[in-house]
Image 1 (cartoon, helix red, strand yellow):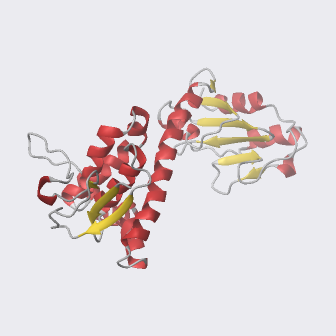
Image 2 (cartoon, rainbow, N blue to C red; image 1 turned 180 degrees about the vertical axis):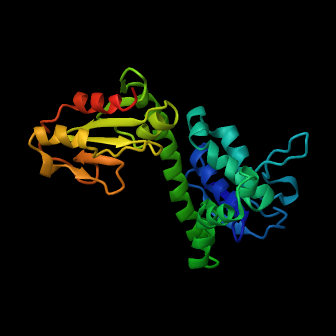
Image 3 (cartoon, helix red, strand yellow; image 1 turned 120 degrees about the horizontal axis):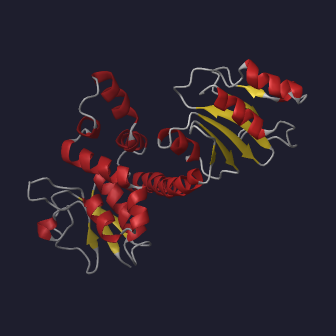
Length: 282
């Protein structure tokens, strides 16, 4: 069976490279993993094995170097060489983060050098590298468990990234009202669809229909509440006033959601909700 070698006390590049090799390189999914000191020379490596994030006297993969002298991570090399275009796009931000962390030791400062000290502290203590260090504090000197747990997270990020690409397609199918500020989304299956409509399409209010669920949700910069009297009047006229939930922050007004599904169809016409919302932008 093929083996994967990397250094003990794994860092982000090492653990991402192990996951990337198993995920993308043919015939490596079931490879066993062995950990060696970072200065290991690779002399006793088995034939056909891969040495990741260790130089091992030139036998290992340490990442590509640009003519400018910039060195990329081992993880970036694996993704660029073996992942499909869809997979590359799905985890492009993860590759950028691992690259930045591997070259600087503090990815946040490289990716966003203009942010203030407090933001650096918050992002550095909650980002993917902080997750790695948290696992290492629990499973001290147990690299195998750390790699397994981090691999689950990376697999989730890959699936989430691919789902976001499907969400882009869903967003294109939304019914956008004249003026381009209000959209009706029907039976969305992707969590990111609303975000894409808000961030990339300039939509300010979404009326969603999801099975029996019906609701209206706003983008962050919108100032009027989704339980505005104009919307409450529509609901009241339909005799459903007690059935609708208004979020205290005002960004959601709904009869059924993914968290609490409605069991019957609403009498409220979604288009009426959308048209009333659209009037706010005239």
